[in-house]
Image (tube, rainbow, N blue to C red; front, side, top):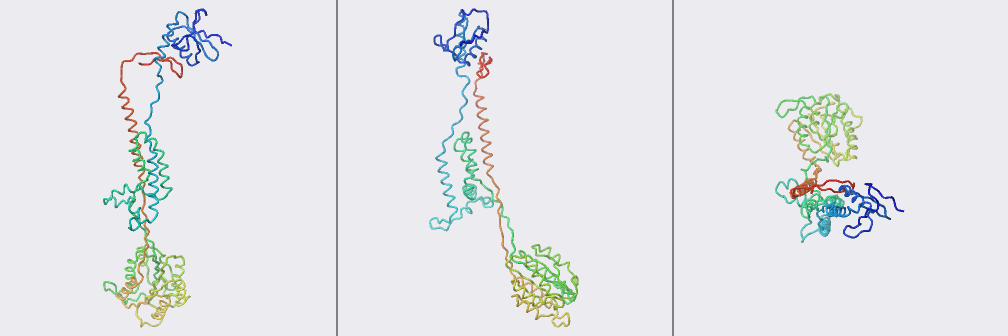
Length: 465
């Protein structure tokens, strides 16, 4: 069923109207699409040519007065010619360079080289090559002139996940950069970032003690006898002389964990095991005769030391006991304490200081001290003066040699963001240059206003030619 005609400009009889051909270069006939019917009607409206639209089947037909048919055809032909190539096609991007073959070969080479770094491979009869040590980004060696490590480090990877992860993440940038930068610069920047170059910082080393050394120092009343001299030759008490010698001994124990137990009538923990030798020496200097009681409990002091070693996991455990008398107030006899120490693999060195001829409670029990040392595999020493005491601790320093286990760690700082940043800046610069050069190349000429129907909104607009 035909729809009633759309009469835009009434006043013309229906018999005076003529249909416009669907194809302007051909004869009358055919129907128009709704889109073309609307655009043509706007052209006719703009040129003040009366028109009517009728629905015919699945299309439309435009009618104009018979006397204005030629004018309508002329205007519509001019409109079609002017808009033949409108809207212009979108600009074509730079085609991607086909790098598939290069990429496949590159992955194969990187995979083979990664396999080579995992195995101890002899090359031409030479010893196995440590590739990571030979080509990593060692900061110090690079500064010394081995600049080629900046390149060789890009081919080294920690594991397969590291290698594949870097390549997959870098794929995000390949498409865009290859379009903007072509193959050479794009691959150079991307491969540099994908290899995840790292700068090795100077090594951080930490010493792990392999020996726990416990000093047992007698503070009984007899230690105040002034029968020793110091390094300056001045007369001092036994404890002051012991402090001076022990201070020099501690200064040479770097790398050991040292603890300090003082004893008199009872033992007391003065310094738990620590590598802070300065603190240990300071707390030793703060001790005084009689602060732990007037009597001598050497056996109990050894028992306290055994308990302190229970939480120690170092391979070497040593006690050095210094006393000037015999055990007079211990709940555990020194000989029994020494047997327990032997079972716990603790070595005890005993140092006796003072006059062996002393009798009574202040008697110097050398036999008991020798037995304790022999039971645990240690040594017994007798010091009659400051020189002998210093010599004893020098010998102990040689016997109990310092064994230090050093753990080294080299922090790594990632550098991959630098080539990525350069790639981004180059890409932005390429876009800016393209826009600027295109703007300069566009000729400017005097324009004449022409009417055009917007293909999306079907509105009439003026354009500059």
